[in-house]
Image (cartoon, rainbow, N blue to C red; front, side):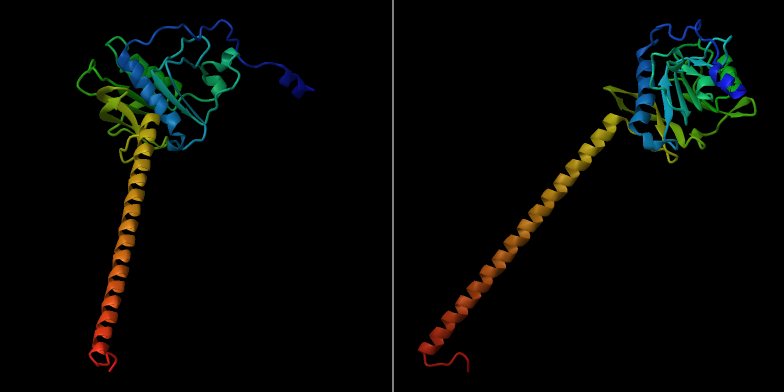
Length: 263
């Protein structure tokens, strides 16, 4: 009876008064493109992650306590979580730690100015809520000369890392000079342990196109080689026939002279 009563009681916190969407715009083009590069890449390459289910999002609130304002990372990654299908329910449209059962595994902040406090209060708060890895990308060098800094949570605090490989996550971060959506720049990319960047969907399609073109060229080369072999075989056959014809004519000439060519 008590078990039946417990199942009838909704133990979820009351979130009806929480503001989960304020429609604030993205601050600049650099951040907007960089955030999409980091999110799109993982959804285009789900096999790059050790978990079958994951969530990577940009500019979505992370609510960790009812009476505390949310943290809003530029990008976060959470493994072994599943996004509910019914987005009509308020609790399914943002990241409530108590709903997903865990904080994000990785948080990335992209520095736009000196007001974000990415190396101050944000660093402390992300450590407090249990985010395992924290990265600060400073493309305009607002905070100094270091473009990328990564931190690992040890105990209840972050310790700065000497590398950018997140071993339990099976992913790392790297700086990459290249073109994304027509803009040549230095970008922050997900990478493998040996530093190879995880491709975007467009890059994967381009790689497949290039592989298909290479296969077509190899097939064409094989066809040309086969044609050349056929032509050589045909030439050898013709030479053999010509040689045989010459031998026949020579034999006839010898016989006309009274000489047995088989003697």
